[in-house]
Length: 132
Image (cartoon, rainbow, N blue to C red; front, side, top):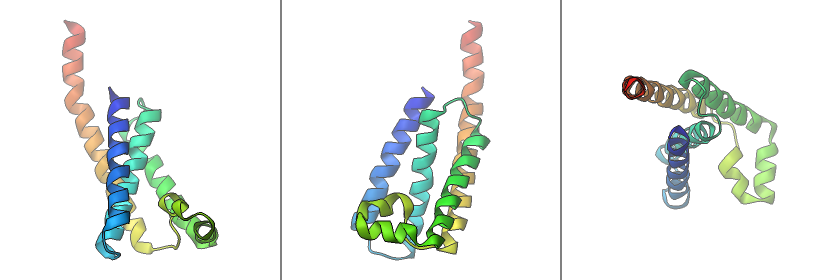
């Protein structure tokens, strides 16, 4: 079941991210929305691949990946890649933005917290059905 949740979240986040990227005007709001959706999509992908990871581990890996990608932009390589194949910008971005780091931290904490709360809410029901 957890894998299905991860898949669903990843698909919805990617679809929403593409909608923001393709139709929202460039600006702070669309940038923040895109960053948050990126974190959520990565979280969904990790849950799909590693459903047994604890919520905090998944959130930490998502945050590490997102920050790593943002720091990678300081090298200029993603900007060069985007010039050669524009869709790569959806994964690696182009230029470093300090605000993105804050969005990644807040979103990773929020999705990790929501994941942990959902798992705690479901755990008692599973224990009850296993005893029956």
